[in-house]
Amino acid sequence: MTRAWVEIDLGALVRNGERIARAAAVPLVPMVKADAYGLGAVRVAHALLPLQPWGFGVATVEEGEELRRSGVETPLLVTTPLLPAQFDGARRARLRPLLSERAAIERWVGHGDPWHLAIDTGMSRAGVGWRDAGSLRDLVEAFPPEGICTHFHSAQLGNGSREEQEHRFAEALRALPATSALLHADNSPAIEHRSPSPYQLARPGIFLYGVGSGHDAAIHPEPVVSVRARVVEVRVIQKGDTVSYDATWRAPRAGRIATVALGYADGYRRSLGNRAHALLHGQRVPVVGVVTMDMTLLDVTDQPCEPGEIVTFIGTDGGVSLSVAEVAATAELSPYEFLTGLRMPLPRLYVESAA
Image (cartoon, rainbow, N blue to C red; front, side, top):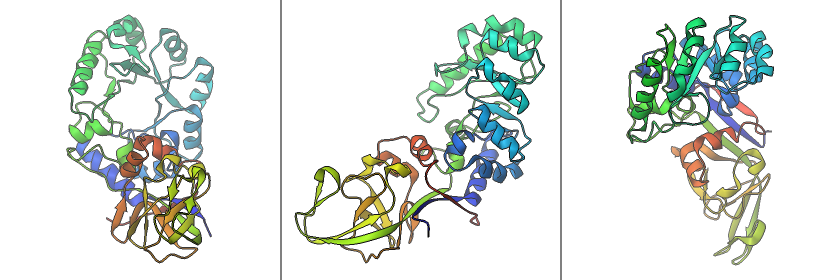
């Protein structure tokens, strides 16, 4: 009997992919880096292959190698800059790097392998600055990249930053020789708030995994992820009894505490103690006391509860739901950080719901 697990709805994942593909109206490059945001890159990529994506986005050579071993043959774009020492491995796995430094480009293009030029338009993380793109004009002319891209930092905010970055991207493109390169910039929030895409590819990420960017978006995803765990003990406590480390919660009345086999070592963050809720029999019950390494405590005074019963920490139970976005906000985390924090310890259970 599994004590705790992450449940992943591949049916919902695919429907989210279909939805964002229709909106973008260009081929997709789904981001499956960080093990598909914690959901399992191999299973996610194979589930999305019937949508005929242009390729997939990964962060490391090792992630690309794993997909190749699993039989994925589409282009794989490495979105994190590679060191020259990693080039041989990238070539063997037939990966496309994002490049922006002259020395790295010269070393890569000597073998004739495809590459993409990354342009920084305000993220200040990777890529040649839009003001300096012209300095690479000779290399782009001699060794045309397969693609040219940038990355939006705040497309969900509607504060004009996306438009500003697009103007910078266009400025950089004017400084380069005309090419047939595939242009790509739109991430999930950009597609949700503006479609179809004006570029040739789109790079959705967290939308696929069930997290949207707000009520004002034009499209919204289905939930994909559930986190569930079993009650392992139920104890009676008296008024004034303390619960968990540092005694941060004291019982206001006599009641019952359920110990559930899920903790911060599993990615359920310590900061959720005394703040979050879980679902039991379709009812919200409070998380009380500090979340510990392997266990979380719930006040089940008003609910029937026995060892072995299933508690939902993310997902739906009896028509009541707790979303990734809600739980992440309660923990004062981004949904990205919360999802990727679940990727290592917990086993994954894959299901395929119907529409």
